[in-house]
Amino acid sequence: MDAVVNPWSLAGLSIEQDLRQHRQPSTLSGCSGSRDFEPYEQPSFNIDGRIMVDAKTHHRIMADHAFQVTSFPTVSAGRKRKQARESGDTELTSQETSKLPPLTDEQALLASPKLCGFSFTEKKFLHFFVDRTSPIQWNARCFEHLVLPDSQKELVQALVAEHASRGGDGGGTLAFDDIVQGKGRGLVLVLHGPPGVGKTLTAECVAEFSRRPLYIVSSGDLGTSVSELDEKLGRTLDLASMWKAVLLIDEADVFLERRSLNNMERNGLVSIFLRALEYYIGILFMATNRVCTFDDAFKSRIHVPLWYDELSPASRARVWRNFLKGVEGSADVDEAGYDALAEAPLNGRQIKKVVRTAKSLAMYKRRRLDLGQLQQVVDIQLKFERELAPEEGEVDAASR
Image (cartoon, rainbow, N blue to C red; front, side, top):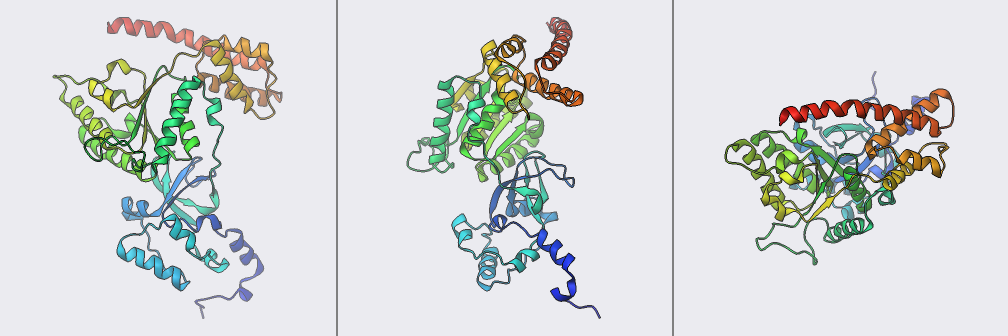
């Protein structure tokens, strides 16, 4: 006869050890509302990046994949969650969550092995295994690696700190609101300059500095039609605002270009973007390479425009040091070597790829990474850039 409940005495030691090995971490038992965590790389979703644990929003948006939640055996905790669900307020505050009694070992063994959340890497709502997640290790020294004038760094940090002091929602005693209530309460920064000079890193540093999630989207993620942009941009801003995330819209040029009388579709895109910026209450970065094409209406919506120059030899030397500092086992490069590497006209993204490729070369040769291997990859990269240059010139001449 099948038993509904099997006692431990009949289960066997191996089964008990296996269950306790997969006991859910106690740090996740308080995720009644939403929390952000960092999952380890695991094969089921092939994701190595940060996630937002948010069952409520997951069930709301992915209704077809929602599952029923049963009450906890503890009477008081179960009653509180049941009342919250029946009232429609399923998100408990952090103070309310902290008052809930901790799960017993038996309750933890019965908990679901999966979390409902959002992957900032895949930009999708998914299920994640609990034992593949860990709390985020914030990098408080991220700004030290950003090659940007100290005055600009200080300004960005001050604006973010002031915005956070208002609760990150545009309210509070320090709020300077627009004449029309609800407008102009966000923080909008435009990062403009050539590729690979630190625009994305600036947004990453702000997220680390303020301990907020970083949500990066591009023009391709938002769509290029009026109806598609209206829907996707609205949802993106809602999620970023709800999670108090730092939002970076990369390649934002297509939404910011000057309107004209003969392109109504583009005018619609610009109008939707303008309206969204007007009422957004979070921190928004927009990265662009063509600020000269901006529509005039955007100028009044931008709080801080940050220009990024091409990297100078001194700046490139700092970038080389920053990347090589993180190489396991360190790199055999002296000051003269850094000066030699800095002479190559590479941007930050190219330098990062060179370091990664040279590290693979050193591992293949079973040697310590040194200047010779780095210079070997640099020469290949520069040859590639020289081969591209004539073709780009021909395309430019043909377009004129």
